[in-house]
Image (cartoon, rainbow, N blue to C red; front, side, top):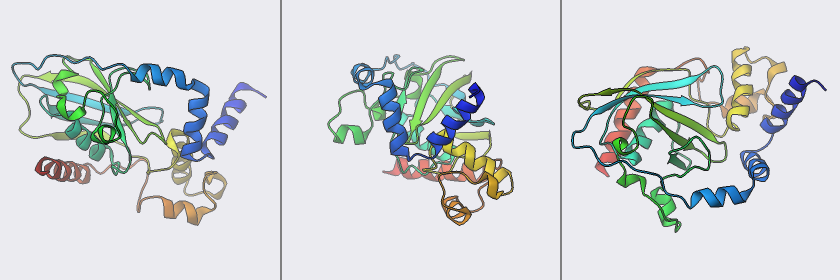
Length: 248
């Protein structure tokens, strides 16, 4: 079988698996020893700068085509738990799964722990105690943001510009393409769904993880189309979620 056909067959197989099955396969392939070894390391933090600055960042969702991304302007003193709120809403996720920030281009690189991790007995650097300007400082710096460990959504945040002053409030500048539906099966499952919707719901393109077109349509958010990103709706969602989080 040609290499391209083998790859297509493998992607079809993975997309038909449940998120838990995909994760089990990944863990089997990579091995648990590497995971356990790297999780014992702590991320490296910079000192808090004397002056708070702003960052223009671009967040890209990895492993999907065409690209899905958002551009934001954030204050450097925003703590990572609030950065999570902003990024989750800007992308369009529903915050119904776990997340984590990590500082290296490796799924098992050192990461910050969340309140949930703390309650579970994990030890490490709590994201609530870390400011954005302790992990980002200059143009080109990167931070990784993972969401839903079952589906395995990975985002990379890259600094495009360092501003002399922080913004008065978080600003979602622009973005491209819709957030994938929740629990769709990760990048592999998403690609099939996007092709089906882009293709006018052609029966021949119905993704393997759905029983029929009715099942698939019920799974998707109302009016969802992979090419559509509503900037104003996303801005309102970011503003409301951040206000609610800061009032807690």
